[in-house]
Image (spheres, rainbow, N blue to C red):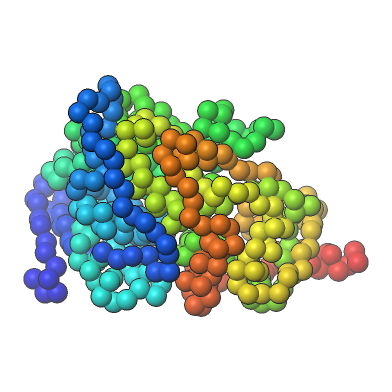
Length: 382
């Protein structure tokens, strides 16, 4: 086949063709990742322990994988020697080069990736196609609802591990911080589907690990986290921040998150466990604005504080973070799994800027509409 791309086809009545297409072995550009993960093999395992070993090659299915977290995770999995298939709708390119990645490295990665095209909400297709292929491990990066996960479990009765990307947004708002894995959760959270998925995995007796990130940042981020600040810094504009700006939050670098996903693979300690994953330091909104300026080599920014209750922004979002204290403890992951972030905040923001926004690439165009409303009122008051 042209370009050395192999195709494997299976015929199903309702879906005429299913193609698994090799679509990278590469290191993260400009990073200090150490991806070798080894665990001692034990003869006896406690009941319910994981049977998969991270040091052995596994057939892995990644639900999602074409954006942000999945891009970095899939590279690490390939580097570890696993056979990796990305399940996507096929609306976006299956792979893309990392910023600054050499063509040779990218093509090597691309040639090792397999692609399963389909809609995860087409449950019959999911059951048929996954059962036909069989997978040892599933990484579910984009699952939002429990009903999307059940067909995967039904199709793979011998699944060794289900590794799920949940969210720290599931915790109930509390006066006691940081959030810990044992804290109360909010059944009315917009992430309630992730809570229900965790409950489903537990009830099914699956060997699962659930990762709850806080705010994620880094190159190729599709959420306007650091990008929101970089747009304003580049334009030389004041940065509007709600209320006092002393609200405390937490960010974790995408490469540290990808490394954590690798660390739980085949780790007996991670069996049927939930872990918060993020940076190990907290930062105020004002401090984050200044950290972004430092990362991009910009002057100290002018910060404008405002009361959001005095404005009507319609459906527009004036600030990219929850206007509250929001951060979680990562001590459990440190103590049980030895997961320690490689990136400090300024260092991580610098990496993001240099490999993405600083190259002139970003996901969303600058929109200063709400800024102008805030600044206009501020000038009148002044």
